[in-house]
Image (cartoon, rainbow, N blue to C red):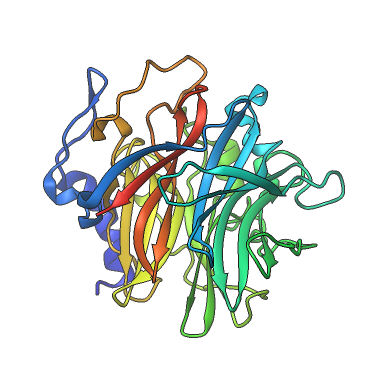
Length: 359
């Protein structure tokens, strides 16, 4: 296993060791075969799910219930708010289907913004559902002011998928001190239990870099950190070697987000949305033996059009049309069975889930 120093050096040199990639006539230029993870070769598109009139649907986190049905915890917001409504008016809901292919039927709103005075006053977003220690754990992100600097990770728990949910009075993890790489927020939770410890991965960035950034596309540089606890409810102690994944040394403000972490075959595995490592239309796959030093990313999935999915032209309001984001896995006995992503478009030209079967 390469050392952390070797990993960062590899990241810095990688752009010069690969063939260049980009766009031509609106199509993705082919990547070298070596850039693709084995995971990417086993995706079979099933189709869109959770197309809801009057809503944008995002962050689809699936789990099998005790009855064998599939429960999806997803975020949604009023379509009149536009795509940006996730930050200042989102709620987390639950839908159920007999099979992963759907159709999914809305059941209830699980978590909604609580209003002034609460850490999750203005939005509830980024659901990630887990069955852990005999209870259901819903990791999520809330904001108190409708802005990125108040994003905080929380944890709600329930004895059943139908609830009742115990709502946290305080966030599970706070940002670092002023000037730290993670002083802006904590968001995009990804969670695993390993060797009796509770491992929480989180996304953040530095406020000063965010405020002073001259990057016309993405301000700041998103990195991932790790916090570990002896108990599910915490306290979570941040790993001294954070950030555990950092692409900033590659230049061109390369970064990533939307991590989903699981363990398989004795390794930590991670899916994410690329933000410029290859380009913004693909997903990333990484592996690690210890959960702290990670392999150089390979491509996990591509844009919808590259799977033969035919969709109407994008309306001007949808700037991420055709891109797959927020990858979440439906696991059976710890093994990936279906991939749920979020994608703009669909029947109502807002956003919905898009499902792949993993062959």
